[in-house]
Amino acid sequence: MSFPRIAAACSAGLLILAMPAFATAATPTTPKAAPAAPAAASAVAAVPTTPLQAALLQAVPPPQLDARSWLVTDLTSGQILAESNAHEQIAPASLTKLMTAYITFKALKDGTIKRDQMVSEPLEAYHTGGSRMFVDPKVPVSIDDLLMGMIVQSGNDAAMTLAYAVGGSTSTFVGMMNQQAQQWHLKGTHFVDPTGLPDPNHHTTAYDLSVIAAHIIDDFPEDYARYFKVKKFTYNKITQPNRVSLLFTDPTVDGMKTGYTQEAGYCMITSAQRNTPSGPRRILSVVIGTPSEHARVADSQALLTWAYQNSEDVVLAQANKPMANVRVWKGTASTVGLGESRPIVITVPRGSAKNLQTKVVPPKALVAPVQAGQAIGTLQVDVSGKQIGSYPLHALSAVPQAGFVGRTWDSLRMMFAK
Image 1: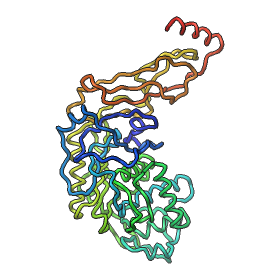
Image 2: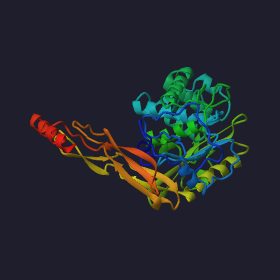
Image 3: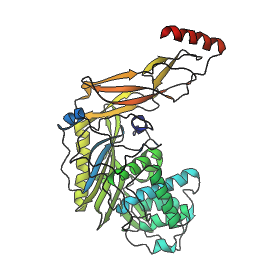
Image 4: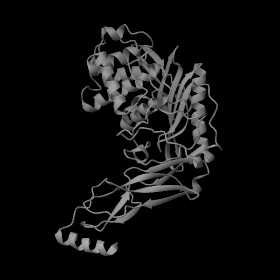
């Protein structure tokens, strides 16, 4: 995906950029366990707010919302801009279907199932209550139509049928959902079914949902574009509109999902991408537990508007372009470029980009062999001379070890260089 460059800000071992551009609406919640950075690029991670950041953030308080818990994230930089009760466990209702979609997309990529594959609706799916796609158990249906029916129409029958097609049974598929959640270190999440129908053991958090949503966008951009922006879908001669109503009113919104149960309240995850001076910028909002359908729409729009109007992205480093060339000893080349395979982006309050300074901190001594992608040095980010965070930099190319003569010569040179 071209927008969430979170690997640059949130890869394993990351010192991480430390500037969520805005303060939280209330006292920040503390996760039960600090979420480890997932392997894929799309995981969002909250970062401690320093006193310097807090002083900057107070100038742009987030909007007042009706939601029980909420979160807004810049997926281009990987920064959480603001949140309230984002780690509180909640009933996800049909937002559960995001994980159902992710597991299905994985199966499509792995070749376990095919998009045009025809499957039959199992009786368990036919008898599942709630919102429906209206699959006829006597008529086979394609995986493609089931994904449309689940994502656009929020069909529980579609979600259950997909679970059988991918996992062979509901229990096996739910196990796959929970295994994926564990791999992403989603400590507040446990699934009981693929639909989100109420169960006391079925829960997640706004933060965890943002991670799932970001992974869909990042790991499966073509599938995201194919299904989530569709405004209406007709199946079995029944046309239903997408319940993400912002698709109809905000042209920059291209997904994602709504949910409602009495326990969960009205919920919505929304993703929008807008062109900005720094390039395409994607904002993700998660709104949980509003009192009405209107309120979840209003809260989601308020978060998107607030994020775009009050903050901006700054590209600190272009993809695959060296920030610095550092000396390599005992190698076939004398230098190696340090940079990132993805752009390094930071989100700051609008108008404060001019106060940013960056500095490459190289290693004391770099000895070959150097592997391409090897973490070497850091990019330090300062505001008015005070450090607010740093990013790891990586070797943009490999430097093999030199021969005996070259290694010996550099050993002597290193002695005199000390």
